[in-house]
Image 1 (tube, rainbow, N blue to C red):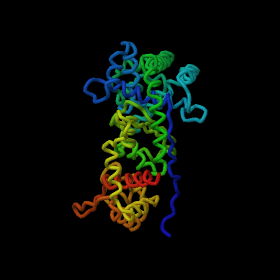
Image 2 (tube, one colour; image 1 turned 60 degrees about the vertical axis):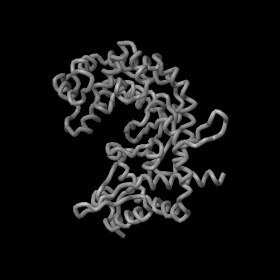
Image 3 (cartoon, helix red, strand yellow; image 1 turned 60 degrees about the horizontal axis):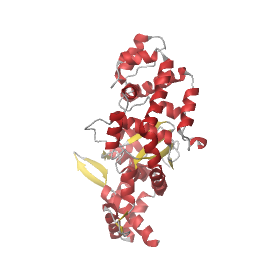
Image 4 (cartoon, helix red, strand yellow; image 1 turned 90 degrees about the horizontal axis):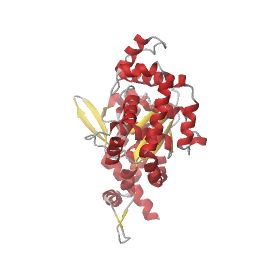
Amino acid sequence: MGELVVGRPALKLNYVVSLPLDLVSVMSLLYRAVPGSGLDSWLVATRRALPDELRADLDLLHGFSGRLLYYMEEPVMRFEPLRPDRINAGMDDLISFLQALPAAEYLDMVANALDRVHRDIGTGLMTPSWGDERSWRIYVEPALTTASGDEVMTLLNAPEKLKARTIRLIQGIWDAGYCTEYAARLPNLADAAALATGTAGFGFALAFVELTGNRMPSTLIAGVNQVEHVTFCPTYHLGSFISYIVYPPDLIVFFSVPEFIQRVRPVQESNGQVVQDERHESLSSGASLDTEEVLEGLRALGDANRLRVIELLTGGELYAQEIVGRLGIAQSAVSRHLALLERAGLVKVRPRGGMKYYAIDFQRLGSLADALRFRGRVDH
């Protein structure tokens, strides 16, 4: 029978428009939106127009919790924006919640954010006791980016000030232009979320590729084992970048609305005639896969372990023994799964140094997805 291991439920995929979560994404983008960053013009112009005091809050509160900007995730995730009664929460709901939290909770958010940083970089350092300023300076140092140790210690020694500046930043970004922009883009966000639900049957890895247009980064693959629920959130100004929040048991993945819509929907000419963009030209080519090729591809994907192989390979090429180790099943079983995926054309194999390296054939995978869309549209 082989080894018995404890099973893990398949990740549940959700699709949500959330003002609090979109705010986290927008603030992190504004923090990075300097000329030459490659971010879109609205972000660069909005950052430039921020009052000096607000820009200082943005750079300080994002600048002491590592390159993944953990601290400003904390207040929004404490709000539990994915709770059923808070899915449609507005800014007033969020601000009221944050104002009601005692200042000590904000110190706890700092400690949690820095603990996440130290786990990422593997320092082995433990959170110091409050009041031990020397140990806190050492603890904060590896996480500093655009903040200084003195600035951070000033906040930690005055939790009411930390609370006030955190709330001031959130409210200030809203008032400085995000309020108007969010209202204008909300119909687009809702449209994209509705379209995205069509990936619910793909599994997480394939849905990630389809919605973001990118392969999954290795840092995210490492974090997936900690989560139970994946929520895809549309946002408007992300562009081709990847943005996500790993906050077990939840993973929130943001995807860019304009790019996603362009990939999955025809555009309209001014005379009302529907024309196809480049993605839909390739969609038509999905008809070039015959029925047997489509069925072979679906059979190859119709197994939990083979889907896990695809998820692993979204982070890049792996050699066979790496896949065996990560799947935790017998090598002979992994070899059969890889052979089926290779025969269906969904993975490519490259021999090197006596080992076989496997990678996703994204062109073939895309053709299979296009073939399914093509058949669905023909049927209707």
